[in-house]
Structures are given as C-alpha cells and as structure tokens.
Image (cartoon, rainbow, N blue to C red):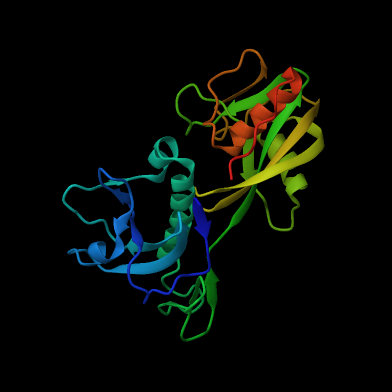
Length: 275
C-alpha cells in the first residue's frame, strides 16, 4: 500500500486518478489533489501532456502537465512546499515524483541539440527528438548534505532563503568528476571555511526542489574557524545539542542527520529516515 512508482502507465488505459500540475503548483480542492482522470480531462482546460506515474493504494495515477495554469471552480493551485508541510508522507512522495516528471516535461519540450519538438517514447520515461534521435531523460542532480560535529556541538548555518530563525546542515551540488566525499569536504570549506575528517555516509533522499538526490553524511570537525561564505551563508555557528535553534522539518534528510546524532549522544533510539 502507499505510493509505488512503476514503469510508465499506458495512457490509453481508461479510468484512474489524475494530478494536475502547472507553473503555479498542483491543483487541489477540498478533497485533496487527486481527481477522477476522466472527469478532469472533460473539463475546459488548456492543452496538457499526460504521464502515467504509478499507483497510490493500488489505484493508478496519471499526471496532467499544463503549460499554463487554468481556473477550475472550487479549486486552487498550491506549491509543493505547502504540501510538504501539510500532506501525509505518501502523498508528498507521490507529489515529489510528479513534480520531477513535470519539471522534466516542461524543460525538455524541444531538443537541446537541434531544436526540434521532442516526442514521448511509448513505454519509457524518455523524450526523443524525431530528427536527430537525441534522448532526454528526467534529470537527477546528485548533491551532498552533511552534519559536522565537534563532541556535543553541531555546526548549523542559515541561508538567506530559509524561514526566519531556522538553521540547518550544509549542502551543495556535486561537481563533474568529483566524488561525493570530495564534494562534502569542498562544500564545507567553501561555505564555512573549516576542515573536516572521518566522513561517513548515512543515507539518501530524493528532493524535488527541483530534481536533487541528497546524499547524507556525518563528518567530524578537524580544524579552522567559521567564516561564512558571502552571499550564500547568512550565519553559521556551533550549537550545543541541548541548546538548538529552530530546525528543518521532520521529513527532511537534514533533520534526520541532526536527530540521528542527537540520539547517539543522548542514548536515545535512532530515528528512521522517511522512505
């Protein structure tokens, strides 16, 4: 039960549920984000692309990807971050997957090599150029996220984009030719100016903002003083584990990294990374 990603569903299959996505987010009404697929396709809506996603509680789900938002009585558009805070985890997982498929669809409508209009390959999540045969798959961007510790202290930082008062772990994208461990050391050095050691991998999480695969690590402080990176880090500091600032939401891998370390230091049961 719950959300299950599958190979692309056959669009000629009748029935099932549909999600509607546009540049303004997902369409929702008082019952949530799932609509009868056949009913939604009968509404007076702009042109859309249709993608079979998978199954929620054994019911098939499609995505209708709209190039522009449309008005539908009793409905409103909501961004994914709102659902991240409000929806149950299985619904958020489903929307996360749909968000990344929609992002891929909207950003690869045309061939990046010759400019021709791409066409969906039946049975695959692939857009193929009919003229030069270039295939475009959904983009996945590997990135690292790391909790740096120093005994009973953890290093947390603020981005200017965070909600007021919240601090989190350090993160950054992997560069071409770089290992995840090399990325951890480089990003920590760039963002706060310190050196680390004993880098250990703890787990991963897909993160649909817009298409990241977050690789989670723990690292120990080695040397240096905190110097926040200009324009990237608003503030960074060492926090004692019993005097922490507001932290990221429970479902995030950032919070998992923090809670796992607190559990080990305080002798509590370790948390489980949401899947």
